[in-house]
Amino acid sequence: MKPLEGIVVADLTRILAGPLCTMVLADLGADVIKIERPGGGDDTRSWGPPFVGGDAAYFLSINRNKKSIVLDLTNLDDLTVARQIVERSDVVVENFRSGVVEKFGLSYQDVKEYNPDVIYCSMPAFSSAAHRNLPGYDLLMQAISGFMSITGERDGEPMKMGVAVLDIVAGLYGAIAILAALRQRSADGSGGHVEVGLFEASVASLVNQAANYLVSGEVPTAAGNAHPNIVPYQTFTAKDGRFVLAAANDKLFRAAATAMGREDLLADQRFTSNSGRVEHRNELIGAMHESFLSETVGNWVETFERAGVPAAPVRSIDEVFASPEGRGTLIEVEDSIRGAFRMVSSPIRYREESAEKPVPPPGLGEQNALIRQWISETVPRRLQSEEDR
Image 1 (cartoon, rainbow, N blue to C red):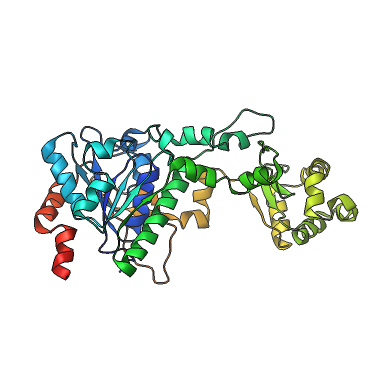
Image 2: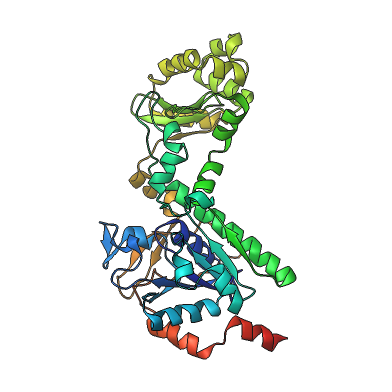
C-alpha cells in the first residue's frame, strides 16, 4: 500500500500551486477528486501549445493520478454534488479568491459542521486579511516578494525565473501541512484548518537572501549566476560553452585551484578564506576566467570531478533528457484517450518500488459517472464516524 491509500481528497484548486499540492497527495496514494468548472475546466488545460489530445502539456504535468468531475457551483444541483463530495472527503484543498467558498457554503466554517474531522487546506494569495482579495499568480509573487530584484544579470532588468517556482514551493508547503494535519488527526481524531499563503511562502523562499538583509541592512541585488555568500560558486565560460563550479568551502577551493594548476591563487592571502574571497570576488573570478578559456567544458568538468570538486556542464532541456540520469526520471504513460506519452515521474522513491504506472491526468469530467456512483454508495464521514463509535 501507498502511505495515503484510503484518504479521499476533494480538490477545489486550479492553475499550479493547488494542483501540484494535490498531485503530491495523489502520488502518495490518496484518491483525489478534481472538481472543475464546465466549459473548459482548469485554466491550464488551455495553456498551450503544446497539446496532447486537447489538453495542454502544462495541465498534464501537474494532474496525474486524479479523477475529474465537472460541476457548475452556481447550479444548485451541481453544488449539492460538490458538497456531497466534500462531506465524504478526508481532505479539502481550495485556492479560490476571497469570499468565493463562503458564497457557495464550502468554507471551513461551513464544511466542519457536517464533516467535523476534515483537514481543510486554503491556499490564498495572501494570508493577511488586508490583501486576501488580490489574485495570486506566480508572476505577481515573483515581483512583489522581491524575487525578481535578485534574479538576472548584475545591473540588468529585474527577471522572473524560468519556472513558476514560487507556486511550486507553495504547493509543496501545502502538501507538508496536510500531511502533518493528517498525522495529528491519526493521533487525536481532530480535524483542522491549515493555510499556506502564496506570498508568505514566496517570502519564506528567500531564505539566505532575506536573512542577509535582516542581519546587515544591505539590500540584496541581482548577481547573475554568482552566489551572494560563497565564492567561487557560479558559472564559468570555457572554450566551447559554460559550466558551473561549486567550491563551497575552503577545502574545495584549495582542491579546485590545485586542479587548475593555479597554486598562485592559494598563495594569495586575499583568497585563503571564503569571507576573503567574497570581499575580493572580482579579482578572483577574473583570474579564474582567464584559465578556463584554455580548455573545453568536458575537460574542466572531468578535471574537477577527479579532484572531488563539484562541477557540471550547463545543459539545455533536451540534453537533460538525453542523459542516463535524465531518462531515469521519465515514465511512459498509457492513455486510452490521448495515446502514449512521456511524463516526468514523482521524485519520491520507496525502498520497495511498485511496478504500477501512474494514472494519466483525467480528461475533463472523465469520471463524472464514476464519482456520482461513489457518492450514492458511500456515507458522509460524519456518519462513518458514528458507525465506528
